[in-house]
Image (cartoon, rainbow, N blue to C red; front, side):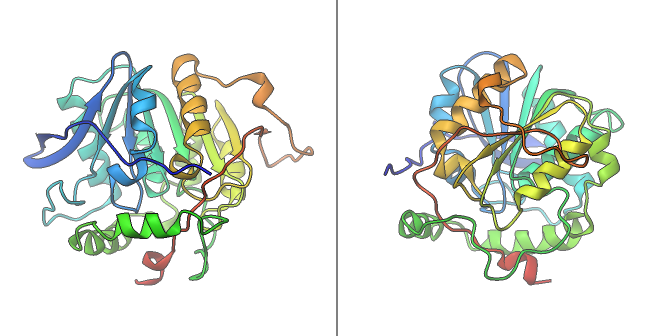
Length: 294
């Protein structure tokens, strides 16, 4: 068993639409932009994978607007507002040929961006990566849903997450209430409109956003490929960092993944191909409490 290391390079700040955004930036080449989920922490989700990704790419991880230590302005945290802030952040950094990667809530956010960037005149993407993303969700997870299949990493994860600013809890609730997260936004039509090569990376045992959601999304996004990590739950960047880095780096470089990593399921007209040849060793647990505090 391995233990992930939560570390990022020295933080930087930039003002976007009048608000201060914290971000981390390292490496060279075409950028991969990382958008965290409802952990509310870029350090937490990307710490185990940032450094190895930056050996081959420029990697930029932002702390999403509203999540401290980024500014927490009194705004409506609608999907449209979040998309605008993300686009203007990437514009302010002068990023081109972008691979945008979002995990969980960040995945739904990234998918909405990909579907709406052109119409809203935001920087266009070269590629999109959706990791256990909040898309094609047909029902709320059970209050008891766990993100991971073992408690081996739980104590360390809990200790780390206990250091997060308490104010971030209120922002999560605001996003749930203001955005389209509970209204199936991005819609199926939005997903069908995504026109860039897309990698869907999913934990086979995700109880929060089940694999069926990823399979459904793969059937809607025309230029997509689905990679499934066996025995992995909701946040692969922490519980399967080596596989995460390998697959994401390969896709960001080439726009595809190895044929040897693909394994088709039994034929189903509603589901795209599923690819699987990975393992996981360090699962941990996540909860669904924010979806049940409306």
